Image (cartoon, rainbow, N blue to C red; front, side, top):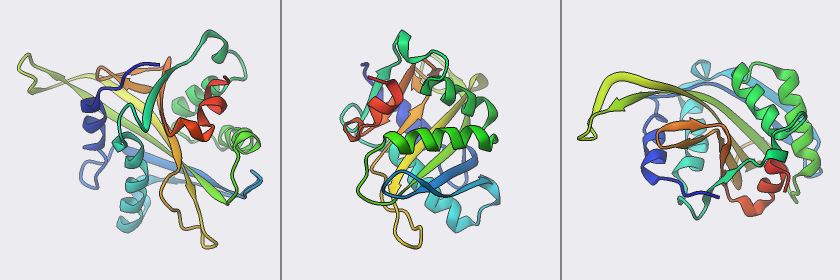
Length: 204
């Protein structure tokens, strides 16, 4: 387990506003308390109403904006966590397709639902985003040139009521980890890992 730089997380959340939105897609599933899928959705983020964009940005932002190294912790995928059929392999594929492959998403929902313990109905909210990371000069001022395009997934697990209205996220993750202003696919930042999310994602 490593330490997360708070400034890295704040840099990301500054791109999670209506004017500087970094997300292009949102997908997810409504799950019952036993882990079965009640319904799914998959939409272009910019086609949502302004109100829905804002409410979903608030959900996504909860993960990187949480208390760094207390609520949000960084974990390393071990050698045994990245083989065929692993969650890591599935997350890499979902990032590569930008959440546009419903069949792959269904596999994630089913696997997650079979392992996640909940005493209430909940929803999985998946966001795909990209951030054109600017170079920084020695005085830490941003330059115009881009150093890297960081493509990432945020997943938030939220309780839902009978109208499918989400409550505050009770756990979630950012993949790949944003470390030293760069994506690290061998690491993942997990929000409230004690929920059982660490065991689901890393298999230990």
